[in-house]
Amino acid sequence: MSLLPVSILAAILTGISAATSMSLLLLMLFGPLTMAISAFSLCAGTAAGFFVYVTCRGYGYERPRLTFFDFLMIFFFVLFCFRQFLWIYFHKNGAIYTQHPQSLGDLPAHIQFIRYFARGATFWPENPIFVGEKFYYTFGMDLFSALFVNLGIPIEIVLPITGFTLGLTTLLALLHWGRGFTVGGLLFAGGVAGFSWMVTGTLNDYHAGVPLPWNAVMVLMIPQRALLFGLPCGLLLLWSWRRRFVMFNSVGLPAWLEGCLWGFFPLFHIHTFLFLSILFAIWVTATRRFKEGWSVLRWALIPATLEVVMLTNFFEKKSLFWFKWGWIIDDQNPFLFFMTHFGFFVFLALFAIYHVMAPEKKEHRLLVYPGLAFFGACFYVVVTPWIFDNVKIMIWGYLLLLPVMGEALEERVRWPWRVGAYFLLFFSGFLTLFSEHVPTYPGIGIATDKEIDGVCHATKDLPVSSRFATVQTYNHPVAMCGQPLVAGFGGHLSGYKIDAAAVQENLHRLMRGDPEWRALSVSLQARYLFWGIREQGEYPKSTRPWENAAVRIAEGEWGAIYDLGLPP
Image (cartoon, rainbow, N blue to C red; front, top):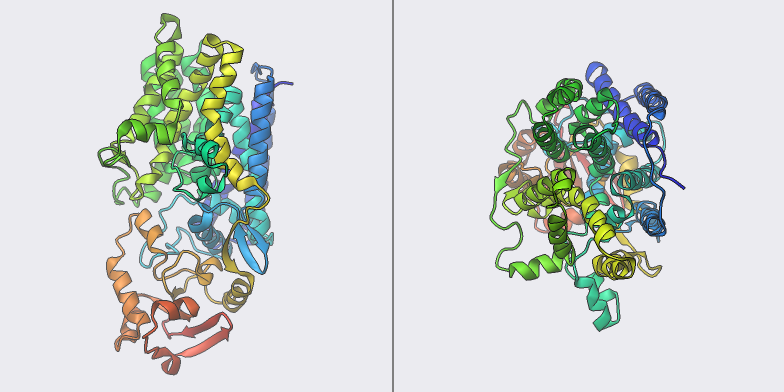
């Protein structure tokens, strides 16, 4: 059996990119999302994907036959996608659950964004989690998901199916990029902490411990939906660019297709777009294939520029980068830090560096040296206030190294010893995943069905442009129903580099029942106020003057909604 043709992979990713970009264009021209715009955009994406499949089907890509090890890694990756993505959002015991704890903070936010778009947000949209600001988040995957929700497909179906489908698409991209070793290297990254199982005899101790930031599929693929598209599309472009600029006598994707996928990338994941752009410049310069580079760049230049301009508000947004010495090492012993987080991959990376020093390994040096540079830079350059999120860039340096690591093992280590190397490299990460795949692992609750159903029913006819004053929490039912808030969860606000101190202080004053609460509601553009169990817990001494002075438009076991009288 050989790898599936790259035309299938290119068609899927082109279809998603085209449908999302088309919907964005139509929304900016004609207004809120409608069923007609959703249907037309998805049809356009399907047509674009089919055209790419037919166009690329005739390209003569060699497809190496898969070994037993490759099949084993495919099995584990499919199992991972099945368990994690099909249980990303499920109902149990009258509540909404997710399988993975890392999704607890991010998943409710994505649900809010998807429903916000599906309910008719105008474009360019206002920020649904902060008043007075446009939405500069890379929302491509959420907009794509909203097309289906707008057509009436429940979000509990859209989230698992898109996740599972793109998880398998990532598997295809990994196989093309570096075969089974690259699949295992991404799936089973996890340091050496898992070896503690040999001492304790239980997985629970490991699972309950501090999560390791370098288990990339857990901290990136599951909670950060942007990388559902970003990973496979980035890998596809790397595969094609490697053939175009680095390898000799090889054929990549058509230049126009590379350029279009690259050019529309910022809408999905701007950090990956920046990585790809820098690597593109390095490879073009190092190989001096400037004519080839221009043939790709000319297709990407206009859409990429427009999207970056819109996502940065004409470059007025704060910088994406700043310096911090040592990433999250702080006062830890550097050697122990690297072993704990990266395990025996540290020694394999050194082995790969030695491997590519041979004169005939020039092609591989163009992977290893930029990979090490990107990886090392992330110990000094931070991309978000959550320095943990530097994994968004580090993962790409790691992925550049993995194919060379795998080749070095195959060429220089005999099979029996290679089995031992695979065990040392993958065992700890395997236990990381296995601890959440056991049948007894219950998942983690997000919200109750009764609360979400009640609040969504009460807000379904309210203007999607009208904001709510609520307590700031990651899983507020008003947000999960698609309504914009005065100020959302503080962790999300700081992660998006929003200076929210003044707004948050005024919101607290409003919720405490400050004598100037009406003026505060006007300054905060709060048309509605929600009062429920979370608000009661956060503001137990609130005087709640709105109960007598404002109109109560809905109430239930979940709480009450008050119209503060602000014009819509």
